[in-house]
Image 1 (tube, rainbow, N blue to C red):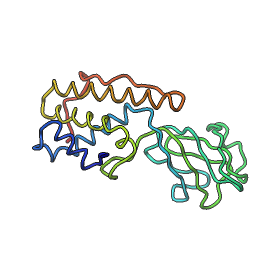
Image 2 (image 1 turned 120 degrees about the horizontal axis):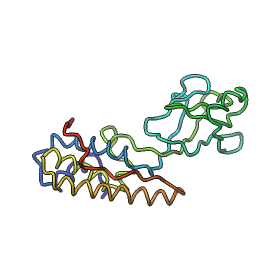
Image 3 (image 1 turned 30 degrees about the vertical axis):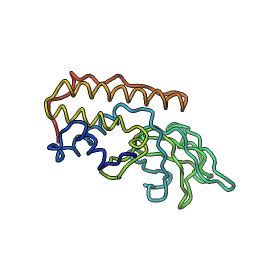
Length: 209
């Protein structure tokens, strides 16, 4: 059975035989998600931009879960078509009254040309990460690759408990799971970078549980 936010915490506590740390476990999961955001670079995410995301004209705010846009699609007169990324230098050179066929990304925003009509929706395919588990019961990454959450949570539990040997073992298992994940999906999408493994010696001693 797939894990969710609640059962993930139970799995972390059960694996460590530390039911006494249940109050701290949401913090372990949150910190594990931080590790995932910094190391998983091969997780595809899809989202839809609609009128609620528009900040004005052709400018839309991207969700925090998007790290890199791979493709943008919209519904045209006949069927869906792909928009072209023309970059910031090119987007303002295009007419605003044409059908939206181009886009450019700047930080947490994406701008379209021509300016989309009211209620136009765009499908964004990108690389990023799921919503935090504290805000949703589960997600595709937890369902398909629960090891990165489990070992990330165990690392922070053991580190909190000052069991440094077990913390190092959990960290090694986390790094192995992340590297395998990045390689697998990197091959699937035709490429993907793998960040260097975590170095236990650089972990700060300050903890925010």
